[in-house]
Amino acid sequence: MAQQPQPPGRQRGRVVTASSKKAIELPTPGGRGRGWKVIAGDSLAQLPRIGDQTVDAVVTDPPYGIDFQGADWDGRVIRNAAQHASGERLSAGEAFQQWTGLWAGECLRILKPGGHLLAFGAPRTVHRLAAGVEDAGFELRDTLMWLYGTGMPKSRRLPGGQGTQLKPAYEPIILARRPPDGAVGRNIARHGTGALNVDACRVNDRYPAHLVLTHTPLCDEDSCHPSCPVPLIDDSAHARGTRAAQRMSRLFYCPKASRAERNAGCDHLPARPLDLFPNAHPTNRQPASAANDHPTVKPLDLMRWLVRLATPPGGMVLDPFCGSGSTGAAAVLEQRRFAGIERDPNYQRIARARIAHWATNEAGERDGHP
Image (cartoon, rainbow, N blue to C red):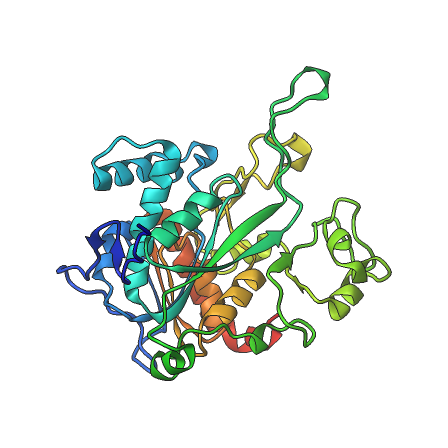
C-alpha cells in the first residue's frame, strides 16, 4: 500500500506544535523597532518558540553534514540530536537526514501555507537534505545550481597522478514549498504565499533560470580567466567581455563575496584567525585574520536574489542557521523583515553587526539590486 502523505507539521509520526515556552516575537509590519532580529540559541530549541504560520519564506545555508573542517556543528552536534530524537544508532547519512527532518518540520509549521524554503546543500549529502525536507511534509519543487568554479580541491595526492576527489565548483540549493491550502490562486489571496516572484528576478527581461553563475576573482572587465565557468555555460560570454556578457545573458551573475563585503559593519569587532582553505597552497591562502571569520559566507547579491525570489514584498524571512547574517543583510536590503537563529556567540555578534550595517545603508544600496 502506498504511504499516505503526512499533513503539514507531521514528521515521521511526530506532530510538530508550537512550544509551551515563552513565544518569540517576530518583527511585524510597521511595528516598533527594527525589522530584524538575531535569536541566540540552537535552532532545534528556538524554532518551537515561533508561532504557527508566521513566516513567509525560509532561506538558509544549514550545516551540510560533511564534518566540514572537523567542526562540531557539522558533525557531532547533528549526530547527537538525530540519535536523541530517534533513540536509534544511525549512520552519518541517516543522522543528517533525520536531523534535517527535525528542523524542516518546525519550518513547515512556522511557514504560511504555500511558503517556500530555499536551503543550500553539498553535492555529497544533498540527497539526504532533500529527503529530510520531503519527510517533513514539504513539496520538492526544484533544485537550483550555484556554479562558482573557485573551490579548493581536497584530494589526496597519490602516485601516478591519481587523486581521491574532484575540485568543488558548485553548490545545489533545494527549493521546496509547504503545500498550499487548495488552489494556488486562492492560497495567494488568503495568505500572500504560494508563488515565486518571477518578474522581480528576471535577468535582462528573461525568465529566471535555476542556474546562478559566479565569475572567478581572476576575471577582469574585458575577459574571463580560463578557469572561469561562465564562458563554458553562457555562450554570450565568448564574444563579449564579462560586463557586456552580463548585460546580454539569460543567466544571473553574482560576484564572489569580497573581503570588504564580508567585513562590512564589523570594524569594531576583533580580528580572528581566518583559514578558509587549510589544504591550499600557501600562495592561495586567504588573509591571516578578519573580523568576520565565518568559513562559508555567501555572496550578498546571491542571497538578495534568493530572498526576492521566495519572499513576498514586505514579507517575513526566517533563517534557522544565521551564521554571519548574509540572509538577514539581504532581507533588509530587499525591504523584507528577518529573523535568524544562531548558536555561536561569535557569529551572533558578526551577524548583528553586518545586518545593522546594511539596514543603515539600505536606502543607498537598494536600487542596485541584481
